[in-house]
Structure formats: structure tokens, C-alpha cells
Length: 230
Ligand SMILES: CC(C)(COP(=O)(O)OP(=O)(O)OC[C@H]1O[C@@H](n2cnc3c(N)ncnc32)[C@H](O)[C@@H]1OP(=O)(O)O)[C@@H](O)C(=O)NCCC(=O)NCCS
Image 1 (cartoon, rainbow, N blue to C red):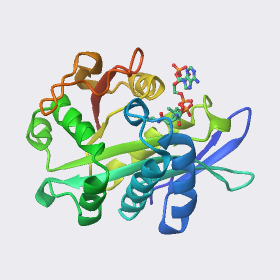
Image 2: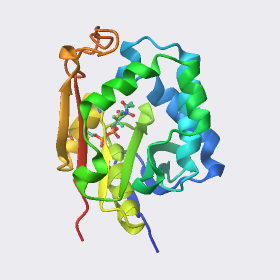
Image 3: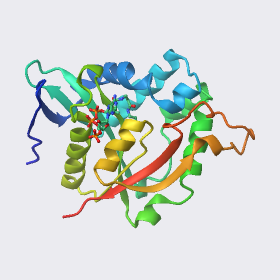
């Protein structure tokens, strides 16, 4: 059986477990408060708060359903204080975006330039590139403001890797969009597979750079991966 163990710090102790649908409301609240308003791509586009909430609430719900996301809980209070939302992507499932996400994409057109930027970051078929039929995507790493800089973010990634391995995935992939999450994956020896300087980016459709507000240290966008060895 998979166990994650306790994590002790000077400030508090924490335990980790897979998030279930019972955690949905709390996970959404944590993400909306401590991630959505800070995610640099959307910050640079000045996306209205209610639109961020709609998209991120849906993302959290769809990831939790896959039973592969990890939560950090304060041991004393049982309070959810951090999440690593993970998405299991199988080559056999194709590239189809689900119906609800398609509707949200249509409703909120600011998502299209972000999607185009992501496609430009890596122009290859990732399954072929990594020679795998499945990828464990780590998204929306979030730690409650009160508990940052204790190593919880790192622990959430380490525990997600543990889970990935346990369920038969040998590669984890992530796109850190903050200087801290970039540092975090660097510390864990992730490979920076593809990188793009958003200051030099030009959107093929509009001929403009909608992300020019993303300045140092947020200007480098990367796709990072790690092979999980036996
Ligand atoms: C990014 C985030 C998840 C980091 O969580 P965390 O629990 O503080 O991470 P860790 O304690 O494991 O620290 C990771 C590294 O970042 C550094 N770091 C984190 N916050 C920092 C801060 N405010 N100032 C300077 N360095 C910081 C840590 O020092 C550590 O590096 P080090 O070990 O070399 O010193 C958290 O700040 C957060 O939720 N931010 C808002 C949402 C976000 O941007 N998520 C990532 C999007 S991809």
C-alpha cells in the first residue's frame, strides 16, 4: 500500500494523502485564493477574477476525479494547506479536450493565446518524444500563504512522484510558471526539456506579444520532466 509519511517542520507537522471528491470544495477554495490570482500568465493578461475562478474550479474538479492529486494537511487541525493537482494523460485517449472545458474555452477567449503559447513551447508529440504511452502531468502547485517556505511545495512534488510510480507512470512533467516553482523543480533535478523567453514571443495569429508584462524572473517558461527510476 502507498503511504506518504509525516513531514515535520519547526512551525507545524503535516501529512499527505490523495485528494478525494470530499476534499473538492476545500481544494477549490485553496487554489482560488492562493494560486489563481498569482499564476503569472493570467496575471499578465489581467484576467478578471470571476473568470479565473470558473476555469480553476473546473480544473480542480476534473483533476480530483482522476484520484491522482495530492493534498498536504496540517496534522494538528486537519486543515488542507497545499495541493499538487495531477492529470493522468494516456496517448490512447488522444488530444480531445472534454466538452465542459471546450465550452469554457469558447466563453473565455483569453485562454486561446495561452494555449498557443504552450504549443509553441514544445512543438513535438510528447509521447513520441519521451517514448511513453502515458504522462503524469503536475499542475497548479499551491501552498497556503501561511505555510510557504517550509518545503511543503517540494514535498507535494516528491509525494506526487511517489504516487505516479506506484500507479505505473515513469515520467512526470510540469510547467512551472513562477520563479519559486522553477527553483523547486531545479532543486529536484528536473530536466528543463523546452524553454521559451516570453519577452521574445510573438503570437502567430495576432502578430503581437500579449505576455510582455511577464518580466524577469517570470519571463522564462519551461516544460520540465523527470524520469522516475526504479
Ligand atoms: C510556488 C509555491 C507552491 C512554493 O511553495 P513552498 O511550499 O513555499 O515551496 P518550498 O518551501 O518547497 O520552496 C521551494 C523553493 O522556493 C523558494 N521559495 C519559496 N517561496 C519563496 C519566497 N517567497 N522567496 C524566496 N524564495 C522562495 C524556497 O526557498 C525553495 O528554494 P530553496 O530550497 O533553494 O531555498 C508557493 O509559493 C505558491 O503556492 N505560490 C503561489 C502559486 C504558484 O505560483 N504556484 C506555482 C505555479 S506553477
